[in-house]
Length: 458
Ligand SMILES: [Zn+2]
Image (cartoon, rainbow, N blue to C red; front, side, top):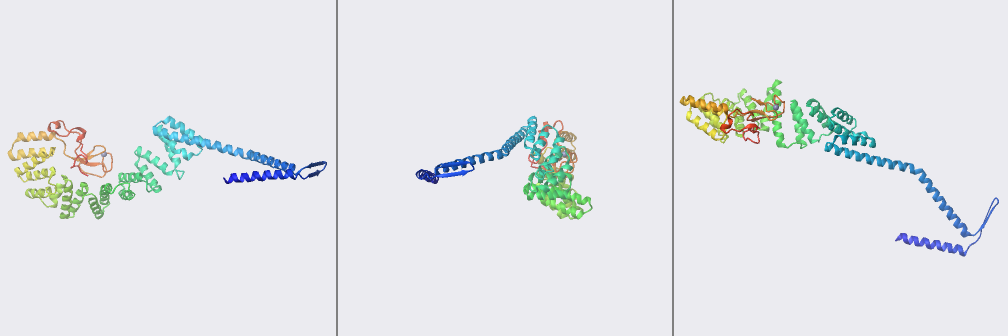
């Protein structure tokens, strides 16, 4: 609106000026060398106006000539970089789709168009990996270490390669370096703990675990069992280094972190017994039994209660069984103690209760055979039970969750595959022929894990 008013005012002023010049033509005379011009003031004003328009046009043309090359180059660059980013995107999609050939083509295109090597390095490395060229990928990941912005990505790439080829040592070094760059990375905190624990560097594993918990890479609940296993490792290390005081402290910490972690309870109870602290040993075993009735606790309990002969053991077994009355393992313990004390009726009752509760293992059938022979001298019945024992499902043992290796004693690392914290109290695979006849679990499913068996350790 304001513009329209201004325009109308300008038009009015111009027409008034033209009219005024028409009414007052006046006379203009110009003499220059041999030139003589005689004209009116109106014509002179028109000539000046035309001259001004001509100068403005020439000036615009000159501006166009001087600016055009720069603008054309900028437009060209803009187009190239747009095509470069498009190729980069297409390359990433090809990597995600697993199309090695296409990713290779797009990465070359993007590299030529963008002319910024750091931008395409990751794609080059991923594309090389997709095409099975780990050496080329490694070169690209290493090149990324030179650029501070890409360093973490390069370290992650090299870390993954080291893990893939099973080179824990290099992976650990790379993970430590990467954590210095990004201390809040959650996947890294978890991976670093795993590697430190696998390497048995317990003090570092302890620190890595505390850090992972602090940045919430793992929950407090998950952390407690791991803390217990690490403390167990620290206890072993202190003992090897000739420091029994520290070894005991770490074992106590392991039990306080996870009371149901049977290996720690066994270790601590033994340590107390070695120091003649029977009451403390008894307390540890009772607490552990109440959480998981494990047969290895029984002898330690007899030692803690100083139960050396038959009837004393029967009484101690009764006391311990009362801490977890529903556990079939408690009946087996009491049956064995009763057999040793020649209390045949009691032994028979407890073995029957164990079998009624579904405990059909070699150990139970072997005890039945022993009872038949000892009480009645019935060799036929004894043979019958021994045959069942030979065909029965194996008794639980420490079985590696990763490789299936079976061990008598628990250790932080599987002796075969070196996996960390992979040994679980479970029924080993590979059942003897004939176990089907007894209705025992069959095949690989017989490897009970913690989630499947309430009696499995850890
Ligand atoms: Zn293993």
